[in-house]
Image 1 (cartoon, rainbow, N blue to C red):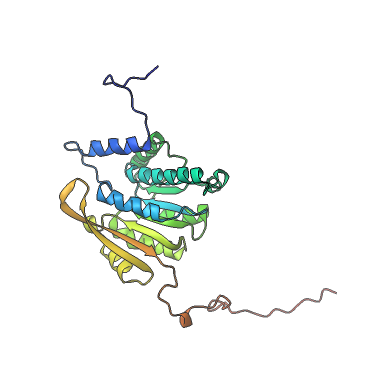
Image 2: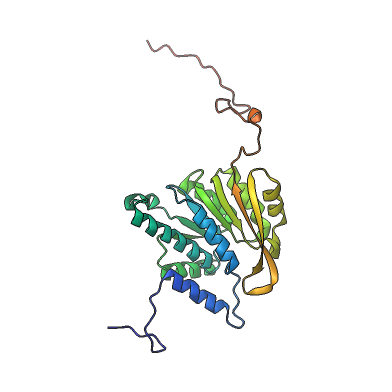
Length: 264
């Protein structure tokens, strides 16, 4: 028996691609514009995800879920990589679930938006890949190291308030969460803007940065930037002579000699 939709035609099969198309159609309606990373921004994001190998024990994180549009796009890209890996044998099914952890973590401060994003991900059948956390990014970043451990991120997408980009990036550095060559994509770097973040990633030798000038989604007269950078590691740009030795104790914590107890 064929299930019919409200218009009389067959009801479409709900998939992640269908959900993304419906959100795009809704955003294109009169007075229904949504500030999501679509069009050219989506292409940059898709390429960034495809360029990061889905090695075991490496995850992705999104700052700012909104309605779950980008989280759905990221989750679908990961799902396609898994399907291809299953087909050619490069990914074993028993090793592909990251020991029960989600591949993508999305953070949202607004509980209403978080509920919408979770619903969109459920409809897209991607809740086994993407998880939405509620709270401020600065408070949730420490949870990443509790859940996944150090050097566990191979991609970061920043879409929260631009004036906090540099603070959140600094926290990721301090906690050693980013794996070398971690790809960081920051959206809306002109409107509303993130000047300190743009300066830091462009000047610092720890990052290899490209700034893309694009039109805002569905707004051909509004310019915006996406800043894409690769984290080269904490020692990038440091001369070999100035790098700390792995056998050298931190300052103030020099090795001490303790008397050996006589166990006879």
